[in-house]
Length: 167
Image (cartoon, rainbow, N blue to C red; front, top):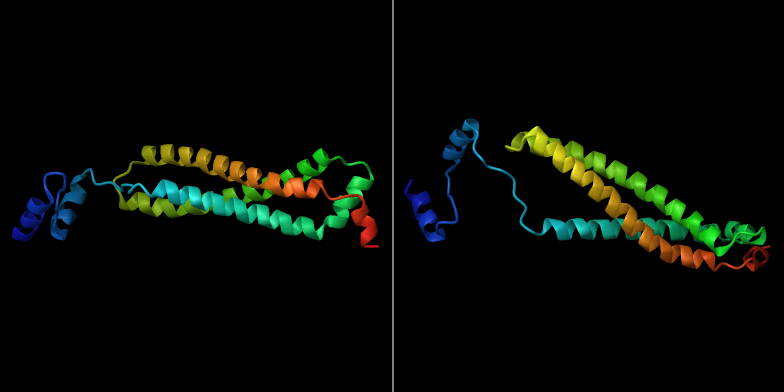
């Protein structure tokens, strides 16, 4: 059409312009139309992992503030700072891995809808799923544990006298 030709001319040779009826005809013929990332997805993904890590570490901190007496008792019976740190990081790991598993499963269910709307093959989708699996669990656990070390350091410094303060 005249309009699409004029738009294509003004955009230059790097772009293709299609009218909606043309796209409807092209899709059944198996065109190479695919979803493309714009470049900001990596940053957004990283920010969401950092936010998730902060939420996990914050939740662990709140729980440990409520369990100061328990940590103090552990210290009284001989737990070292290292033992307390392992306790905290174990809690952070469980929460991070559970959240990553639930989030990953939900995202992949939603991505199946995108799969059917695009020209991506099942093989490509499974390859991307495997890459996402490593990325999601690696980033979730890594960032959560890094922030959990801060909470663990605080918890490891809770003195044995904390038990006596509350009695």
